[in-house]
Length: 324
Image (cartoon, rainbow, N blue to C red; front, side, top):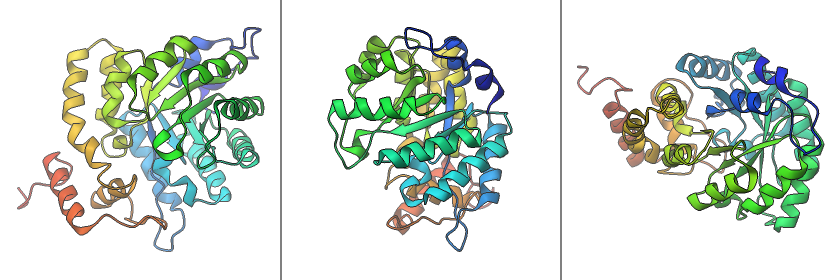
């Protein structure tokens, strides 16, 4: 477990929060990269590539590492592979960065198992997705996250992504959970409704960690009180995505705005096809992973691959055409 986070976890206070709350915010804020899961030619998880990617992220200034989130193709991984990924990530970071483990599924016993495994592996927090496909009520969401939070001493971050789950975690439900779950520390909002972000902060308090899960909304969410972001673009440009947070946190809003606009085209490219299809194509062009996805995902089309290559040239990530 990341040393800073490990030192600050304390038993729940009577009001349902934890002691050392300000330090928890310090340890788990900023640019937390949702790492791709690299596969080898046989289709297995390429652990050597995982180690290389983590070193690249640490050198690039990312504030945290997240594995087995949407960008990591979790629904295509076995439980055993996810558990092994937690161990590899924790071992590779060696306390230099917090590790946020994606432990959510749409099945409560499986989520409890994965969350327990993440805790045993030494992860610093569990990222738990709103259950997909089931389309639970708000009461169902409340009971689900209450049970997950009560099962672990890890800080729990809700992952709200209505476009994938067909269900929105309402701000009032998050507030209700915050009142009873001392280790529920925040929410990753992959939600274009900025009003919801404001409601979350009003319901849960401005010390609640609200992260952007949408690349183009990283700066707007910081501006209204967000604590950081999970941006897939950081797989390509870790320094720039981390600096977007660094500038905002230091009050350098002009610099943050310039980065926001500079990143906009590449942020859009990540979603030319289903994430992480375009991202893996780009990373393969840069020699960081093999362009291998698990079915039912398939590689980026030829036309979009050509567009991606051109974009990487424009961003200076690939040598200029003609070798100059």
